[in-house]
Image (cartoon, rainbow, N blue to C red; front, top):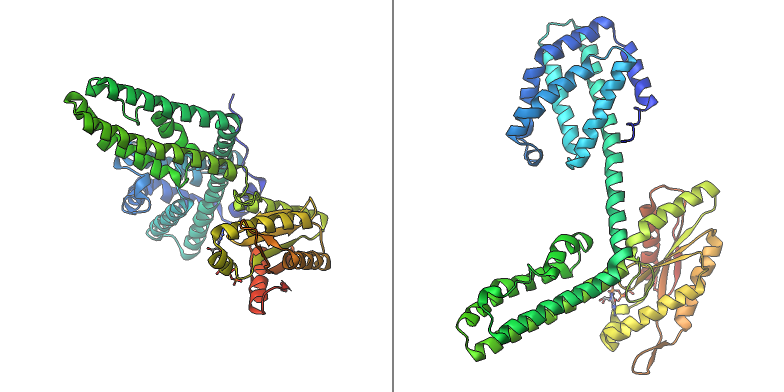
Length: 463
Ligand SMILES: Nc1nc2c(ncn2[C@@H]2O[C@H](COP(=O)(O)OP(=O)(O)OP(=O)(O)O)[C@@H](O)[C@H]2O)c(=O)[nH]1
């Protein structure tokens, strides 16, 4: 059984009641009459406006307007402007929630809805002006109409946000489900599917099968999986477009050539084409492996090089810590730790040496902080440490300890040489501001000052 729709908030109803009581019955009736008399013309003008709006166009068609929306808008106006008691208002608000849910399903941006509300307000004001009302009634009616549309918009938006969040949670749950349940198995299955396709291809090329029996990669089990599952799970992965490009090369160019050859075989050409397909396939296997690997690291929230947390969960962890800190009154601190002149290390000793330094700094950081603290790889050579339940003095002591340990450490390179490096640290204490980005920015400003003042130092953000 579907869950009953939650009732509109008591705050909205209280606002409406006070608006309702603040306007005379005669004014409300005059407004309702104007809306009822002109609702059709207003709906026509409204959709003419929205259909001509390039931002709204993708969400509207002439047919949908003619068949449903024009009529729905009239009913919407009638319901909203005819409320005279709580029950009717409740029904009008239920309608707003339904509209909000629909908007969320079609992903209609909320700014377009706000624009629509503005257009409607203009329409109503325009009709009221022509209705021959006296000055005071006119002003009251326009204000009441504006407020009523605002209330409707508010209720619609709260349903929209709730719907959107629900959908995002389900999406995320689906991704986690796919990852948790299937990923290692899936990786093996897709490797096997590619191998299977390759064996079949080789067999047909060698046996001289009729050309039209060659299967494309897109039609293979791997191709179908890629199209229907991987595109959702690995969305945004850098490998995905290249994988598609390789498949296009094989299916669009090489397979048709192979088919022609099979129908009129020439040994050398068959061998050359087989080799070309195998080369593409080798790349495909490499890319698919890399895609799986990156996905596992990203989804688990780990940075591949250092095994520290990556930035994926930083917003979630920061806002959680801000909540805990607010409710328990215990501040936390952020340290932004940046290796000094890291570019020189890369330039002088090579990128691999740079990588090793980053790995060693990562374990140094982990070994210096408590197990309840968080250590992130924040950027290339930048780390973010979140120290829970600390005051400024304690946080500064930890920052100095990190700085000293980095400076004293002998970083071991793969060629056996050792290297000394230093780090600069910006420190900011959470000051209760709800926007955690502000805290990161303050730590960043402090780090900038540490660099500017000569590096190998800790600077505390103030203000
Ligand atoms: N080896 C390696 N280098 C990286 C990685 N990520 C970023 N880098 C390099 O880190 C260097 C950062 O250089 P800059 O931002 O100029 O800073 P810097 O040389 O450390 O100088 P200051 O921060 O001003 O002391 C760049 O050369 C990047 O290419 C990585 O994962 N491994």
